[in-house]
Length: 562
Image 1 (cartoon, rainbow, N blue to C red):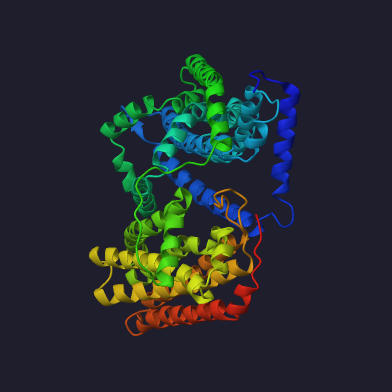
Image 2 (cartoon, one colour; image 1 turned 90 degrees about the horizontal axis):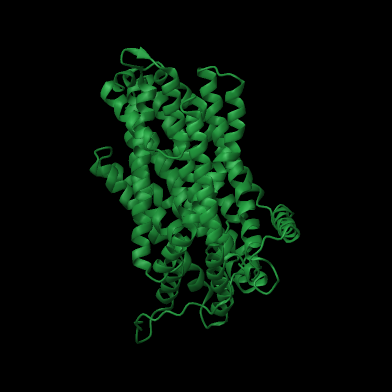
């Protein structure tokens, strides 16, 4: 490959990527449900974030240091913290996007045979990634800066710098990510065939992020409960915040522009950081591209580690369940989305429970631990069951091989369902046990919670498996891995969340309504009757949907491709 930047080739590559992106919005390829669901989630998150940020700013901007208010310094600290979080998230996303574009994209095979310059190819990929990052930056920066301006009025220069930050922040994230892309790829290769280690690392990292999430929830609770947070920001805390902010490079440099602190110094250092990232990235282009092309055009990875074989005939159902387990466990993306998420669901429920239970008691003086536990378990349980939405599709062409074997259709389908049920049951059991150990539930209530969560899991798994059998889409990747969720996953997740909110929200609101009127003890059985009855009804409906003409549908299955 040539090592020069060709503008004509660059524009041609950009047109190619634009057409590929627009093709995903065409009928048959566009996941409308998933797209609208993501938009709704972003809108809800932004609304909640702006609400809480506004309440926080009202308190924090009035905090005094050395006995005098300093709104400019408080603004600098808020913007530095916000930009640090946004920049870290964008760098992580950019590293993943660069690795996906260079080491996982199919077009790299074609490009290796064409007279396309290495720099041209690399820059074209980075430009597209930059545009995606700019959209994220626009949403985040505008939300933070405009909310800050609403509580601390600013001049026209502030808004001009806000627009500049929308384009500058992605430059920083892409520049830093281009330096980290190759080490990240090396780490992926190191963990590729170390499945247990990968599982432990992914699960522990996810759990660590949840602990951070728990601290944020505690802060939100304190913010909602009154003005006690004012007394938290004493002189010692403010000095610690000032010291921490001074080390948050390069986010504090960008925030310094808005607060008018060392403007010339901030500009010069920001330019130096961008220049350094660009230099390192350009120097490493040849090395990165060579590694990427070898990864896409070279031979498949051969595992040299020892293998263990099971001797003797095994039951068909167990053999097929083992096949399903290994397929998920040996695919990092599946492992995280399916197993790791299911195992951290108990932590998610516990953290939200610890905040929600005390919040409800202090706001309306109502004890509704059982109902809140049902609501949270159903909501997070429906998100953890996403792996059942690809029970058929993730097999790829291997599904036809299994279908051609002398194996009954019930064994094939039930092996997928039973594996999902085992994972769901384990997740629900851990959730009930954690809430029992924390004192939120009695033993009988914990057993009831486990039963309700499992029954709803049965319904979701059975319905999702049947929907995927009716509308399976196989990946064209050599490994058969599904890179993006399809309509089936989006529909099942949205339906599961709506059902969870309706059932869990109904029992929670009913408990509050009755408690405020002194009727909670008289009608305490309603929670068990409604939640348990609906869960059982949904489970029976799910089993019926799965089994209805299953044999004919299985043998008429022709599948499809993504």
